[in-house]
Every structure is written in C-alpha cells, then in structure tokens.
Image (cartoon, rainbow, N blue to C red; front, top):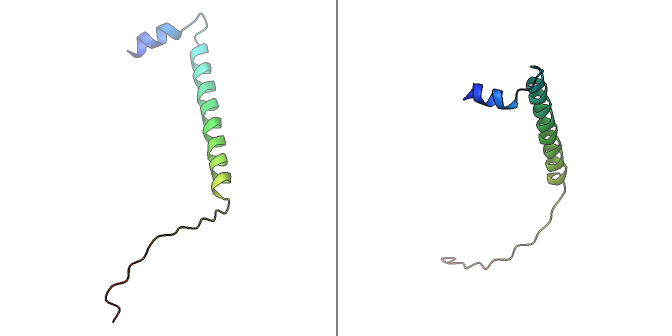
Amino acid sequence: MKKALLSIFKSADSNVPVKLNKKLITFFMCILLAMFFWLLMNLSKDYNITISFPAKYTNLL
C-alpha cells in the first residue's frame, strides 16, 4: 500500500514527496497552534450568566 501511494506522488526528483510531507506537517502544526491560541484567548474572557430555577423545600421543621 505504501509503495503504491509513493509511486502515485513520486516525481522525477525523489526528494519532492519528503519535502512536501514536511511542509504539510509544518502547515498543519501551525494551524493547530493557531487554533490552540485562539481557543485559549476566547476561554480566558469572563462570562456572567444568571440562571433561575424553582426550589422546593421539604422537611424544614
């Protein structure tokens, strides 16, 4: 399976698939890092919310 995939993406220069693979990994790592920092910035904000719910008290005496 691996040989079949390499033969599909292989060109005249044998280093092209390796360079492309490293560039893709670097690209996706940068995307993941940016998403992490975006999430960190959004979750660091203060949020206030009021929740109302009915309370029923039993056996008070």
